[in-house]
Structures are given as structure tokens and as C-alpha cells.
Length: 460
Image (tube, rainbow, N blue to C red; front, side, top):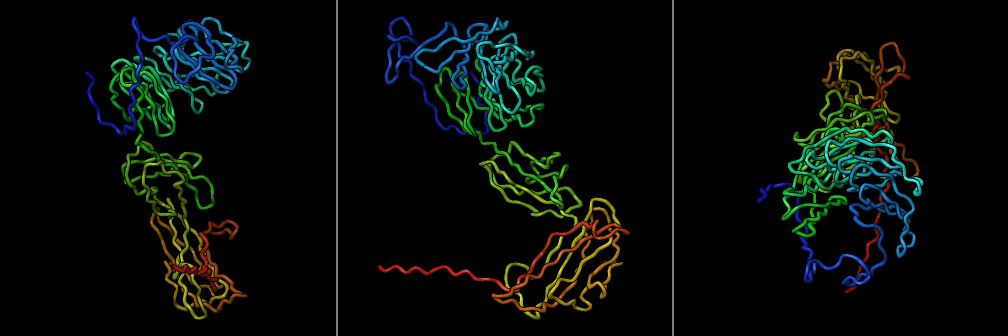
């Protein structure tokens, strides 16, 4: 008796399939005289067939140890147009992608067949899978094979003529079938086995992350999105939902370039690090609400954190890392008037010690308020430049702030409403503003246009 295991799966539907029986065994499986209801017999080709895939007007079937290609333009009259030589193993499954058929050839492992010319299918590559290749699925430049007692085998097929094994995952029982969707491989384990879930977001390191104990024997599997469809020999069709979610996003630096090496955490329980493209992915996240934030020191992060709830998968969770960050108080979108006071604060932080020159010009339409500067050592207000400036000695990962206040010298109108804009920069000593690292830009508004929505009255 199979042991029951608690996993992150929801049972959506269990549909036993009833097979009508007649004296002497099951009803006939094919032929124009077979019992049928709402199904019409159209055509048949071949004898013992263990695999089929369809792409365009062609069907690819496994006939014993060969792959046969059929033209099914007229489904009532399928025609054999090509057949491989002996593949030295029983064709147990086939997947077709990009002009190639990827054949699970049992003891012969993976066979790659060029089917760009259907009348002349040609074996162009092979790979030892370390076990009996019984099922195959293709996704994202990789072939995933169910290889019996050897579990799951992942093969790099970016170059179809030289398929290369890059990952293996041992599953508890012998694997029979495989499907791939959303960064997960689903393994039907067949005899005395269950459905196993393998995280393949890193194909070189496939990892078991879940399972579901089916009532009988899981023999076949298909997956679309979060839903998994399991053919169970004694339990019928079982529909499951994967409750594990992923979180994805990108990180940019202050110049808008991809930011590599940034660590992102979700409540400290899940972490990921951005790659060269600035992208990150956190996988195997169970249902719940999380606080997502970058934890790499030496930057101001915008936003500082994000609150997310999964499922569904959380996408577009992006961050920007700044070394120079500007703020104005009061902030927000409302109109400032003549005589109002605005306080500007620039924050500076770097991952390493730096000696930099600050330049922060007083905005147009304002006047610097004498004595308002709150500076670290070395920074002054320069009346000739109408700016705060000076050399800063910055400690690694320790933020430094400089602030000053101004008085607004203009009142906006509907005809003329100039914004008050400010941003600051720092640059190496001896260099000019062309070498500046700029802050974000902050704006204050001297007039705000109001939008009035019509009031609709309804008589009762």
C-alpha cells in the first residue's frame, strides 16, 4: 500500500473512466465495427504504436523501434511519408519542436531526428540518458526525459546535433511520463509511484519540491499553466493544481542599466540574486503574503519594499538601486504658493568608501534661506553658484544626508504654472559635471489643474 504524503497540491477533479466490457475482455479498441457513442471511426495506420505527436499536417508515431511520419492533411486517409531506420530501442514517446523530433527510445536513450524533410527523417544526434527513456517533453532549449529508475534526465538541445545531459533528479519510484510547464517538470511514476513535482528553473539543478499520491498508478501526465492532468491506471483522470508560485522581476541601477548581483528576499524565507540581465526569479513559494525587498547594502532602493500575495505568480516586481537620492518636503501633488518653504534633502550611499564632490543647485523660482543648510563637514552654500557644494568623505554602506530650505518666489496660474525642479549630483574630485552621478528629480507644482467629474442625478 502506498504511503500518503502531504504536498502543495489541490485536488480539482477526480474522474474515473469507465471501460465497457463484453464477454471475453474489453470492447474492441478500433475499427469501423467498434462500439461507439458520439465518435466516428476515421482511419488507422500501423500495428503496435506507443507514441504519437502532431505538428501541422503531420503525425509522428512510434512503430516498434522506428519513428514513422504520416501526412494527416486528410485525417480520413493518413499516409505514410517517411520512416526512420531502426533506433535500437522501443519508441516510447516523442516530442516535436523546431524541425526536430525528440524520441524517447527506451534503452537507446534520447534520439534526435531531423524531420524538416518529412519524407527523409534522419537521426542527427543521441544522448545516453542513464536509464530507459520512457517519456519526453521539450521546453526552452531542453529535453526532459522520464528514465525509469533513473528518475528525470535533463538534456541541453540548443544544438540538436550534440544533445548533452546537464541535470539529473532521482525520483522515489520509476518514472514513466513527463510534462513541463511554468518552470516545473511533472513526473508520472507509474508502478507503485505518484506524481512528483521537480523545479527545473535551473535545468542543471532539477530539485524535487512536491508530490501527490494518486489513488492508483500514475501512468501519463500533461500540464497547462498551474494545472496538471494525470492519467491514473485505476483512478481515472485526476486534475491537480500546483500551489507553488514564483516571483519574478528586474533590478536597474540609477542610470537605467541592468544591475547584476543584487539579492532579493521574500520575508527572509526565500532569496534570489539577479543575473547579468538584472532579472531574478524566486521559486517554490507557498501560498501567502510576503514582503519583498532588496538586501544588498550600499544603495537606496526604490521602492524600498513590495507587498505581494501568491498565487498567482507575481511578475514585474522591479526595483531600482540609487546611490544619490533626492526628496522634497512637503511632497505630493498640490500647489505651492509665493512665500511657501520647501526643504530639499539629498541622501548619498555607496557600497565602498568614496571621496566625492557634491553639487546641488538651488532651484529656479526659489530663494535660498540663509542658515538652513544642514551639512556634513566640507559642504557649504556658495552664493556665487547659488548651490550647496563641497567634498564629502563617504563611508562604505553608511548613508550621508545634506539638506537646505528655500522660499518659493512665484505663484502659478492656469495660464502660467512653472514647476520647481531640483536634483543633485556628485562627481570625483577634479572632474566636471559631465562625470556626475545624478539623483532622481523631484518637482513641486505652482498650480494644480482640478478635474471635476459630472454629478449625475437620478429621479426615483
